[in-house]
Length: 338
Length: 84
Image (cartoon, rainbow over the protein chains, first blue to last red):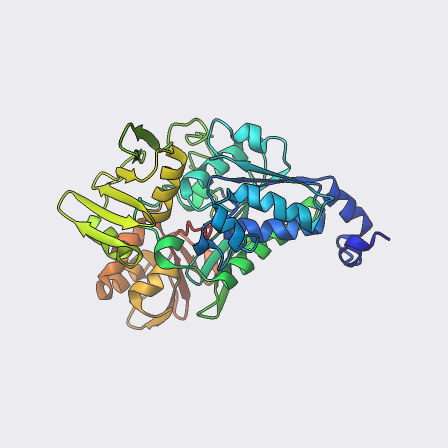
């Protein structure tokens, strides 16, 4: 018996046959922050044949408290997360082909980056990308395993096209920018990340060996000692424009947040799609612990982490300190949220 | 009648506790009416209303579902963090 996976093969629902299936499988992990790195480690150690990691961000010191693949050296070098993760994961299991991709997942590259994989694990930090994954899943029949955390709270669900409700059945609209907590404003505990990502990784293993994934939505709070499994039977909306009428607006690029480089100003303007009027005083209160905030009737400014983010009531932001649109959109997602 | 309400994530922060028991809910009240009753006490909840999921006794529920005595009604906000 192959010693490397012997303990997993001894587990009857996997066995030799299941291990073979894992070895012949391809998984894409979108986002390699905390959830993505925990899940990636487990899937690579489990011997999935091919794992692709997509991430648009680089390693910072504040990641190290929870993002289990990264080291102080990675943060000092500000290495892209996908690059650092690929190297660490390959040293954990050289038999797995690990491919780190430093890119922002968009409607333009989603087919190229996900089309050759069996399923998608969500490690993203924003709803825009999740709605894109939801659309892509409905278009191609691929399952995607959602996970999200903030503070001590986390949630996960396996979205299976035409079997379960889709993300839009549950949340017809993305939360208005600024209305949802993000890890950069409300904090995050490593234990809940590991719990949620492990749960996601378990669903992936189950699907790949042909077992039935959980049909319930996990809701857990490790600080409040609460865990609930919510049945989503009956949550599939027959009038859902997305899984019903297949109006895949995110996949068609019609909901994409617009961003533009402001030449010569070391700044990028990020413009959210749709109606995004926001309550600036409320956003300012939320951001105060993160950086120096100033506010007037028209805009709010926050200086944080070497960036200056100026946020307007229509949801538009000008982010100084970068000329990279992808980086600016990441900063927007982190501090304003979406 | 008496119902128990469970609050997750930011909703818990608004209310200051993760569970709260409400008595004096009129029979026949819907999940939405229970939410509004709670939001009168905690107006900070109002802005979340349109984005919430509601579950009654751990099953996904419509807002117009009538609640029964002793029901557990849970409200979940969308969570976007991937712990980036």
